[in-house]
Length: 441
Image 1 (spheres, rainbow, N blue to C red):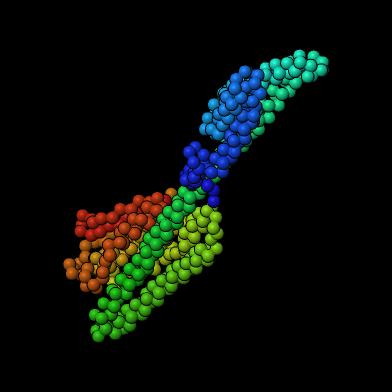
Image 2: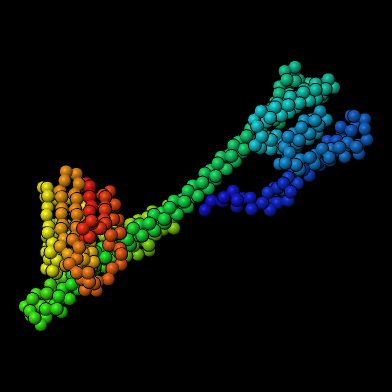
């Protein structure tokens, strides 16, 4: 886990402008050493200048102590070191000040200007000092030594701290950039994980809706026919035993079909839940893996459903209509165009639309004549289920079939998911019509 900018800001526990006590102690120690150095160098300066030694010592102490503010005001420290260079004081201050200045976030032109001023000042002071020594006879070498010593001394006191400071500053900025990039990446990973969880929740919701539609189609149609046959069986049990036996056999067949379809769907759900559970156990701690695992675990239900048994197809449409006809409904099936195969989801949706429409006729218009039309077109398949008004007003409730009001909603969702058009509503003759057009691909 990386340290964010907020965490670093909260970690500031040093006094005044220092972020840490360790930095304050370091600067205090450097300032103490610099003050002692300048105080000692202030003694010969006071003698040469003809002022009291105590004044030179106090001046050196005050000048050297300026190094304590090097992190806060590096420019001031460098300017003070340049100012006391003629007095041959503050060499430690000059080196540390130049390093701090070069490592700071100040513009490069300011750093170059102050480093140049320090170089020129050191060059001049060294040149004058060496010339005085040569004049006094302390140094007996050739004339080449004067510029060589001056340039070497000036470069030695300014170039190393400036170059080191530039390197440390560049490295610090690089680390800050990498740290910010890591923070940004961590935020993006958190966002991806949240989005993956949202997609997983959406996928679970979509799968719950799909399963609810399948369960509604299976239970509503099969059970509705079973109730209708049971009502007919009750009516003809004593008058026509043979017909009662046939109705009882139909009820048994429909019940077995409903149980088979329900068992298949429950098997798919169990396998999907088991796969998702195993995947949750194997989820690693990594944020990237969390996002991927969330999305994958959420989609396993849909994948397992897609890998399950094939859904209904249009070839079973005649059997579906025959079951309704066996329940006493007068159904007229007509097919137009060249019969061909479609994608499994297209055929399943077309079948479910006709199935649900027939179920609604059983529920709300029992005994009404129904027309089922199926048209195979070039790039689409169209279906229409239309029923006439029921012969008796009370027939709709004769079988006491409940309705949850989800049939039309489910049909519309199925068709819309494939890019089709769904229309339903009453007819002028008092019946009801359900129409749907689904793209062939």
